[in-house]
Length: 376
Image (cartoon, rainbow, N blue to C red):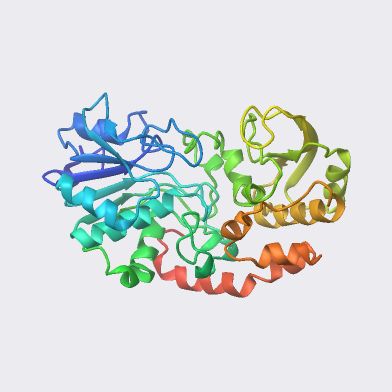
């Protein structure tokens, strides 16, 4: 689209949903590129962390004016479809461009901002354009599928915890499978495919530069473990926020070498555990010394981030019951998509038994997503 001078979008009244990952190979942001080409958007809409990406987890940037382009910027993090539709109407938008890089996990909120923006676009009769980007984890789907009874903004619709789809494929899936129940499909859905990407290609093999999609996703290595170790946000343990290796570092005050030793005994594929001690600068246990482990993915093709995290939860619950606990609000249920994982861990189930519990739902999800896939 950019190489063609954005002519495909010329003459349209555009609204852009984006953040720092909406970047071109020359380093320019798509919004800046559009403005330079004379295809000036009516407004910009920012997700969690904000349009320019300056806010931490669970927050966003306020409404304002982009200082470089002078465009109005609206915060739509956690906004429902009615709110977003009203913003589209006020801006006079007839085409919505969604350009945000996902990391491939159901609880990463950008895809749900896309979903709400699609519902809003359908309600105001706007076209929806997705310049697609690679899924950094590849195209493999894994993990439990959301039970709709546990829907939240970290999971609005029943997809797998590691969905294995690009945002363009998800847009096609959402439009066909879920939007009809929310008032109707978008009048025009245009997914611009990624050239040269295959489902077996992870981000580290693309040769593309990594733009951190959020403040605690600094490297492609972080993305590899995130669909699993993010589950520790549902526990009293630190998931490594406030360290230089978030989600690769997990622990709590009082943990020592014994947790690492028991994980090593499990001989899990594609991952190495290192005993580590750390003091988070913010987040859980900020300013306190924690013991725990650092994960290093040694073979991405055999590494199972969700299965690995389940093993970590099981060993922590069994061998460190004085230190391990779920958050009081049972946020783990929203992350896993049901109360099954929590109840099975509490009942003493092994990791293999827990992983087996979601396989039927996962196979059904894989079947349902198949018609909407764009890449081999």
